[in-house]
Image 1 (tube, rainbow, N blue to C red):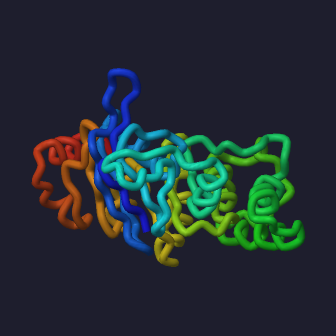
Image 2 (cartoon, rainbow, N blue to C red):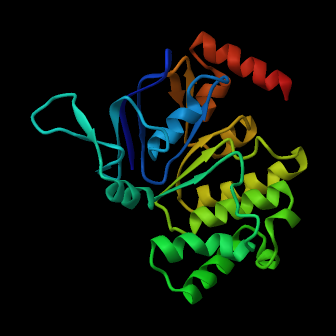
Length: 256
């Protein structure tokens, strides 16, 4: 479903991603772990080209996104047209640390805007879908509420419903619980657990180790802009082989 080949990304002199290769199969849940500054969030943003990458390629369900190889010129690529980029992006939902909801719009309106404007869905069908998704995330009674009246966990669940309203084939989560109070983290993780059980393809950056252990099909560990280790959660959490993984996990687990 997702194929990342040799991605490089620099911010000035800071080489954040150093030739990352990664595959995510259809229906697979891949959790990306690693210390701050290891390139996790940048990699996630490169998948749907919210962050331009300098070299390499990203392919989603057989379609390149961001850059297209130049025929007959090995290693060379050009930026794809914006309308083609937007078309591929519609199949990729993303949930951020911040909720990015429109404060002056109702919850229902926040969810229906994209399906109506980008998918061409009529208002009645979009609202029906939005209400179904609100039931899915446990917020069926909040359709007419404004975001300002919601808790952080409720806002994040609305953000997930908004992403799902585009009927994506892939969901990307960039530390979706890091800005939440501890008591609201569980309600967001429960929605993500449900998506995993339903077979949604997901790539997740998180520091929630228990969630990663329970839900991930595969855990990927990054450090210094490269993937240093990957495997099943049972392998990574009980017998990591890379010294940097061992140090990272011991520090994170001790702090819990």
